[in-house]
Length: 125
Image 1 (cartoon, one colour):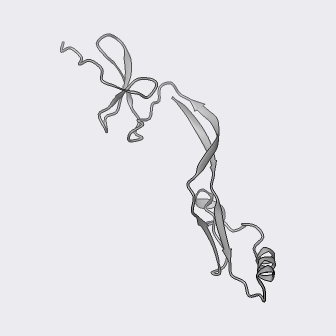
Image 2 (cartoon, helix red, strand yellow):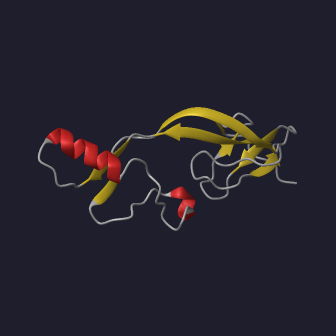
Image 3 (spheres, rainbow, N blue to C red):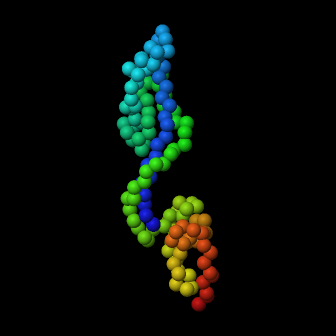
C-alpha cells in the first residue's frame, strides 16, 4: 500500500469589527487592521490551526474541504490500512496460496485493491 499526502483547500470567512462612518470606510479600516492571517494557534502548532490575535476578530470555516492535489510520499507493499476502520491489516494466504489482507478489528478480508473479499475457509490440518 502506498502513502499519499493529499492537499485541499477550504474557504475561510474572516470577521473584523471596526468603527467607521461609511461601509467603504469600514472596509478600508478592516483591511488596514487585519490584512492577512498571521496569528496561529500555538505559534503554528496544532497542525497549523488558524487563530486570531484579538477578541474582535474571528475566522470561521463554513465549507467542506476540496481536495485538489496529491503527492505520493511512501510505498510499502507490506502495509495495508483497513478502508472501514483505518486499522493495520494482517497479510494472510488462503488454502490455494492466494494472498489477502485481514482486519482483526472489523473482521473483513480485502484483496490488494482494497475490495472486500471472502476467502474460502482454510482446511483443518
